Image (cartoon, rainbow, N blue to C red):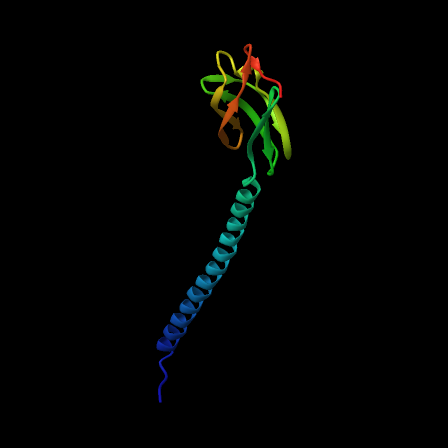
Length: 138
């Protein structure tokens, strides 16, 4: 009885290649699941912290910005067509933003206020009461 050593090594070679491919596929699948899980958690945390963030009420000369997420850098405020370059750090909590310089040529009414940060742009329609060209004090 003669054993063909060449055929035996071909079978072993094919088995080894299949084993390596199966291990590589399993390893890649595990890595991908872990990576996607981390990305999903990061996205959920970002949206969760930004849920209550936005423009609040006007009190005096200030419009208040509620920030429940990470610190943002305010770059500008726009009230209708009036654009104001205002740079300010918006920390967690309510921050007052003086908009008295942004209401030129406006009368009492409902206006769209846009707050532009380094992360996102926020807008809200608010009632602005103007008396003698200035914000009416409450």
